[in-house]
Length: 227
Image (cartoon, rainbow, N blue to C red; front, side):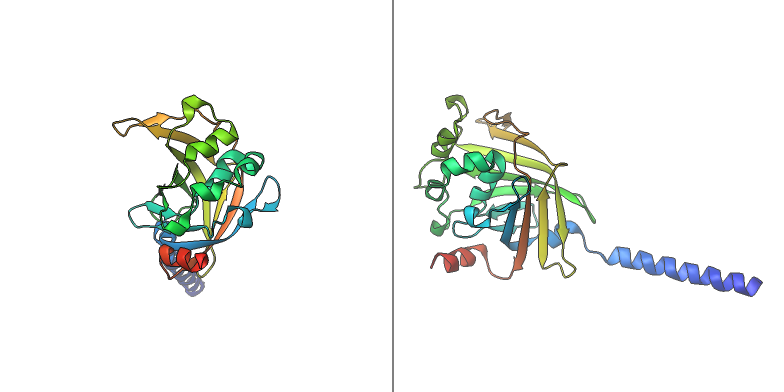
């Protein structure tokens, strides 16, 4: 009887230690998020539509750095998320003039996430018109934003964005869903955040974004897509 108890106790201990090893081997989410990612599908969960062709100018890509900074061609995608399908229709014909990434001028942003394995993170995207192009204010005017809120730069922050990966970590999935909340800000002349009230923070679109890991730099991807 004692031998059986010792056997089963040892078996349970081995299983427990093995399970702990497996858990410890799962890499930190932040580390896996870093790198260059190309969006191959953007899906509007509100309308059930694949919006990828509507937001690619010419591609939608993100470069997530280890210091939490973002360089991207995601301006059109974020405009769609913030202002929704109906408003995006109004600006679709002009949006490529504001976000002309073929000139290799990109949008910036940041991402924030805790240590270890995390199911959600915070995404902040800075939207501004690119040098030499039509101003972002042109798009905001077309949407119907009042003159008091036509700031040159708006920081769109989305908290509790869901993040997941394929088993090989070559595909990353983001979801801006019902658990996600938003805050929109501009900055004063000292760099402090100031609440931007030009658009309601609860009107953003719920979207699923699927991305593939890339070995090339974001500039190379844009140049190849522009040729």
